[in-house]
Amino acid sequence: MKRLEVRGWMLEIGRLLLVSCFLFLTSFSFAQEAQKKPQPLTRILFVFDGSQSMFGQWQSGMKIDVAKKLLNELLDSLQTVPNLELALRCYGHQSQYVSSTQRDCKDTKLEVPFYKNNITAIKNKISSITPKGTTPIAYSLEQTGNDFPKCDDCRNIIILITDGIEECDGDPCAVSAALQKNGIILKPFVIGVGLDEDIMKQFDCVGNYYDASNEKTFKTVLNVVISQALNNTTAQVNLLDIYSKPTETNVNMTFYDSFSGRMKYNFIHTINNRGNPDTLIIDPLPTYKIVVHTIPEVMKDSIKLTPGKHTIIAIDAPQGDLELKTGGASEYKSLQCIVRKQGEMQTLNIQEFNQKERYIIGKYDLEILSLPRTYVNNVDISQSKTTTVSIPQPGRANILKNTAGYGGVYLEDNNKLTLVYNLKIENIQENLVLQPGKYRAVFRPKNSKESEYTIEKSFTILSGSSEVVKLY
Image (cartoon, rainbow, N blue to C red):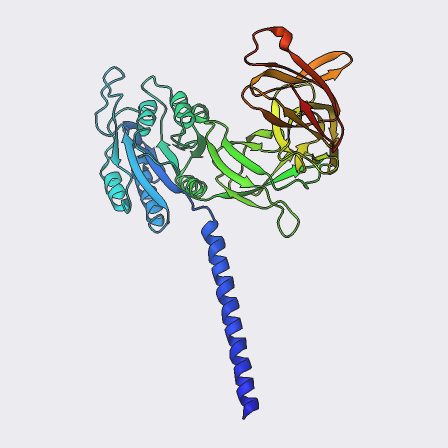
């Protein structure tokens, strides 16, 4: 009986352990998932051509009817897509075109603004459009800047559907560039409905141009554009060492939109469990500039991704380590070093002693903030190696005054004094941590109004020693 009880007890313990492990793994999985960045809201604004030319014949019917039919089918397919909002702006659909001198070049309107579950409203509006007027593409694009409600983390995309060229002396290219530069939109998609080749080229500067030469192509293009607008793609950044191997890692990479300069992503570079640079899931629409925050930074610009294709981005970032040490038991509570590139004055880093930091390979000049300051030039940082720079163990000087006064401590070298430290006027006692060397303290009491009361005391500091300097 007792054996059965013990066995039952052990089985219960085992069951509890399994449950505990399951709960731990589940909570760990949820914790990892919670730490992933939420996907931004994608907002697509359709800018639809309702100008008079859309009455033109196009295979099975008029362009306007074919475009309406295929766009409605596309909208049906977007009904259940998460994290997506749509809106509709039309142009050339309100005022009748009379002649080139009698046309409404401000004929554009946001017919359906952004809000959730508005696809039916968009379809109804598209169905009611009757082509009437001219083609004010530049003005219509300019007005889209007001169509996107303020949002700090949204992907704003324009899909322009047109069968004609700008007819109101506007500059669609300049307007598109300004919208992108100001970070209002990503590079637009332009779908040309049966355009001549010479007209197509004029849209290259407006956005990503797609030629819909026939109805079948138009349907395919719509689906391709939507796929690119909705889906991220993959990339990996290979941080190359001096041997062109992707071994460098564990450093932040900032992705900027090259055109607008806006920050898009930050990723700490990672080598995954297979020994390869980790795969990043990013928006393929912008052209990127990547800044890798090594010391000093390295950068690569004009990086274009192909939607749906894995892109490998190689950036030279060969690095080595610099370690700073003091000899013996250090008297320093916190000693720092200014690191600069050889021959340059710009500060790259302030490094603490008794720590390692990584640097791009090359030569560096060090200014160590000891008393007196220590300069070490032409320090060579090599690939995957640690360069160690040491300074001597310091000593201490206990400066004693019997009254307030003015003075300083100087390094004495070859009959020349170099100021190391200005004594605090009101302090009677000061403890200084000094590098080994020969020093001279010069002092005059505050209440002594004649220079002949100046006091001088020479003293020597040895590593690990302590000297008392009496200025009276």
